[in-house]
Image 1 (spheres, one colour):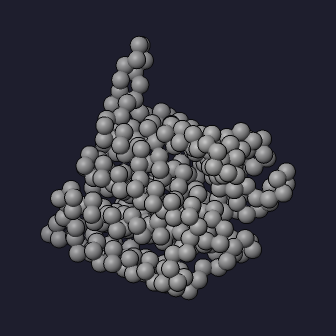
Image 2 (cartoon, rainbow, N blue to C red; image 1 turned 120 degrees about the vertical axis):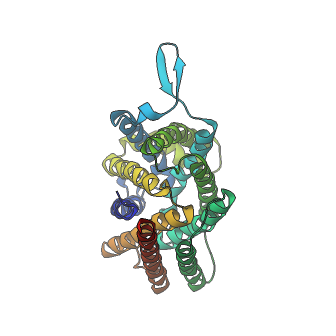
Image 3 (cartoon, helix red, strand yellow; image 1 turned 135 degrees about the vertical axis):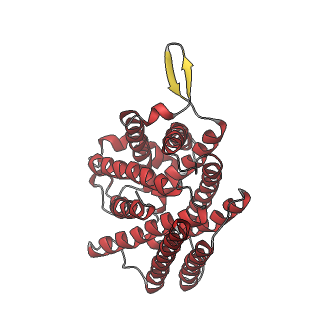
Length: 331
């Protein structure tokens, strides 16, 4: 399918996902007399979305395209050193994305702009490191998105974020840099079988490492947050919130498939990343409106809407630029 259609599907999945995460962390949970925190939701969401991802890999037959290692009579999918590194980067994304929607006093569009903006900055760096040509329309789109990010930050008078939110953004950016670097090196070939191989090998590393990292943190005594993680591994399963958490996990799995179909397109990262990032930011704006209508959050601010408008402009420029390039190639 065209990359633009993947972006539409990504948007349609991401908007309800973002709204549901904030709803879970805003609506009081009766036994605790308060909402569940992001850390209490995170373990079950990570585990369930991982299970759905692995079931999809086997049911779809994608697992057959992965490298395998024989253990006794069994042949098991096994990563290369490159997909292992990408899996570690993806593990960082698996728990930073849900966390980003749960910080009270920090709007969803603002966190989306900050996290997506960082990745937009590293996209051309990865392209240039790999020796890939970055076309003019990709640079223009990147500039528009960067402008939207800057305007939003200035309107808030600076970052002004909780410490955990800053750590979340840093880990997210590091994870994406590793993932894009590996993807550019081995997977952006236009070959469907390569896409399937990369997806499976990355996920069989990312999912266990993400769960292991969260479990390790739950055992470390760092105040109430370690207790929240421990509840997320044990108590949340009988909390009565598992219907919403399971829905959240299914959406997270679907988003991961749509995301990789956009990012692994054989064109330069400075083309693919703004499309994927813009779709997620616009989904964050839509989620903010849904929550505001439900009295669960504020409406997007003027600067946030201005940033979103600049993102729409970036998408149009990328689409027109890509179309003109295809026409010139056909001519």
